Image (cartoon, rainbow, N blue to C red; front, side):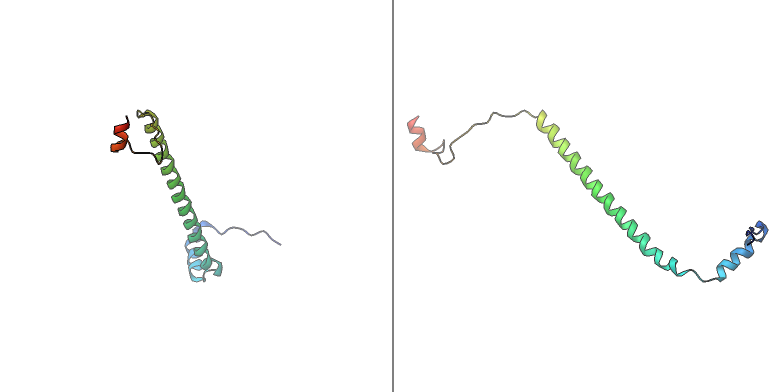
Amino acid sequence: MEPRTAPPMTDLDDILDGLRARPAPPALAAIGDGVMHGLAVRREAGTARRGMMMALGIAAVVGVVGSIAPATPAQAEPLFGVPSGAPSHLLTD
């Protein structure tokens, strides 16, 4: 078997005309679905990544603001006790 030799570059227009005249391979018709599926997967991954980064940023801001803001001391009161503003409570004190 003889090795194939490349045609000279001066025949490039003739080669391209020959390719244009030939029908496209059937595998090329199905390639669009694969490409569009791959793009959709990448778009979903990017959306998920942006959402996670936004949640991380919000959590960081809330954490920093919460640690910087002055906290008031906690005051525990009985759950079912007499409210501090009730007349009976005011009379006993």
